Image (cartoon, rainbow, N blue to C red):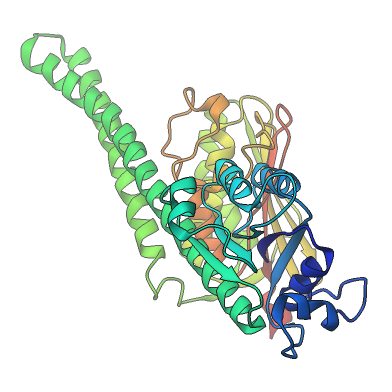
Length: 389
C-alpha cells in the first residue's frame, strides 16, 4: 500500500483525512460531521477502493520522526499533507525537516489562510516541487491529488532504479571484461616477445583458452538473460521427469564435485513428472549445483525431492560457507556475488539471477535458507503433471 503522512494539530482534521483516504474505519465511528471542518458541507463517503496507508501526526516534530523511521525501515512515505499553521514548528519548517530526512517526499501544504506565498515557500525549501491547497476543498480533489502524486512518486523511483541498475551493469561488465582481457593480452605479449619451451608455450596457450572461455560464458549468459525478456520466452513446455533430469545433471557435474573432494547425491523418489521446459530446468539444476560446488570446501551437495500436496519440491542443499541474512535477497540480483568469497571464487554473478528468471517464467519462485558457516539450501516447487491432469 502507498504510504501517506498527514501532519495536523487538530484531531478532527486528522480524522477527516482518515475518513476519506483510509481503507480502515477509524475507532471513533462515523466521522462525517468531523470532515465538514476540512471539506466543507458537501456529503462524502469513505473511498474503500483506494489503497492508502495513512500515518497521522499531531505536530511537526512527530511527523518528522515518523518520516525518519519510515525511511530507515525502507518503507518511506510518498506524500506528506502538512498543515501550515501548527504550534511548535510550523508547516514550512516541518517541510524543510521532512525533506532533509527524505528528499523524495511529495509535499502538499494545506491551510485555511494565506500564510505564505508560493514564492516564499519556494525560497524556503529550494527547487523541490510542492502543492498548496486551501481548506475547505472537495474530497474528490484530495483523492485525485493523492493518486496523482503517488503515481509520480512511483515513476520517479522506478526511473532511479533503472538508472542505478544501468550504472551497476556498466561497472560490473567493465570489471568482468577487464581481468580476462588483461590476462590474454599479457600472455600474448609474452608469447610474442620471449622464446620458451614448447611445454611452457602450451601452458600459456591454455591460459588464453581458459580466459577466452570465460568471456564466451559471459556472452552466453547475457544472451540468455536477453532472451528471457522476450515475449516468446518459455512458451513451449512439455511433461518431463524432473528426478531423472537431475540424475543426468548430477552425472555431468560429478567430476567437478570429485575434484574438490565433495560428494554429490540425490534423495527422494525415483520419479517425478512435472510440466516445464526441459532445457530451462536443466539450466536451473546446473546453475544451482555448480553454485553449491563453488561455495563448498568440504562435505557435499544433495539434491532433494519431496512430494507435497500435488507439488514437487526440489532443493539443492550444500555444506558450504553459507550466506549472511543481509545478502540473501541480493544474491539473486544480476552480477551480485557473496562478499566473503568474491575474491576466491571466479564467476560472473549471473547464475542465480538466471535461475530466478527461469522459475518466474514457470510460475514459481526460488527460496533460500542459509546460515553463515552452515551451508545453504535453494528450493523451488513445481506442480506434478499427473495431478494437474
